[in-house]
Image (cartoon, helix red, strand yellow):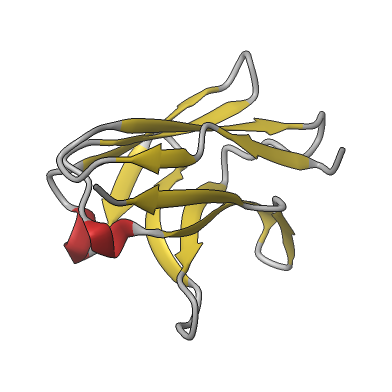
Length: 116
């Protein structure tokens, strides 16, 4: 397994919920910046949500009010709670950890498909 391992993806109906998890290896979990990105076929990878320092969070406009990013520092886990999902949320979701401004790690990705 790599330094970041995502889980929790799958098929969900529109309007449903899904929770993604990301397990980080020792030294990879970061309180500097951790984030979720996603990439759909034919599109560039985009930032979905991030959590930094003391816990400040930011979200892409397209997911504000529906998605929530959180972390468990003791367990070295990052989460993305996805509520009221839409077909346009279909993508591969990637966990990202930035331990310094110059050092970044990626997970292998987990597929989320929103379809009825």
